[in-house]
Image (cartoon, rainbow, N blue to C red):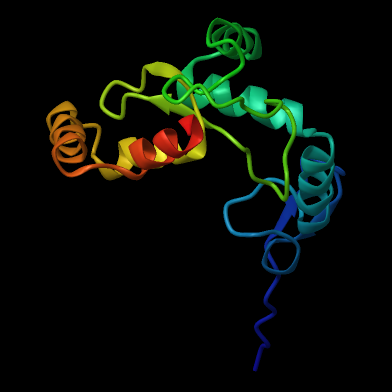
Length: 156
């Protein structure tokens, strides 16, 4: 009786150029061995500074450069495009969160301006509807608003 000997399928890694068994040394469909994949991923992420990540995010999501973003902030005199509250430095992250929002048209993806987080939330809650925002403004005009009360107390 003859014995059947099974041979493991082998693959050469495109990174380290060594031959390794397919079932133990490679993730499915990959051309790099597991060690090379981990090494590449670790080095790729450690080289990305917050500024570099922001540049890539702006480029791929909004087709903007960092210079165009800075020009927009300068044209807004450093403040929110709606309430004019001063915005933080665009390249500073606090616990991985920006203190501003890059406003854009959700249908076209076109950049509109830089907003504070409160104003961006307001537009989002109103679903970018001019009609809804006009109704909200009329409601506040008719029934009074906290802003008007606060402004009148400052004047006294």
